[in-house]
Length: 83
Image (tube, rainbow, N blue to C red):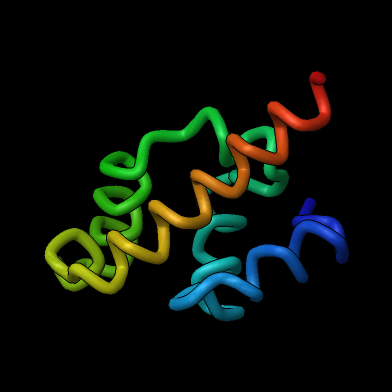
């Protein structure tokens, strides 16, 4: 599976989130905002680093900011849908 077009568009509007970030999330099995909203930023960064065999994701302030923004968007979107 993959993010819906609407979810993908919302994610791509965030600073630092591009197609590669979305692809990495999908490779980790995160393919919806509902799933992303339940995820831990630290876990996502650690998994991405492990998958690439590099610490760049885990140590990069830009990567942390992008994933944090994506998770916050997901949590806000999920809360809005529940209200």
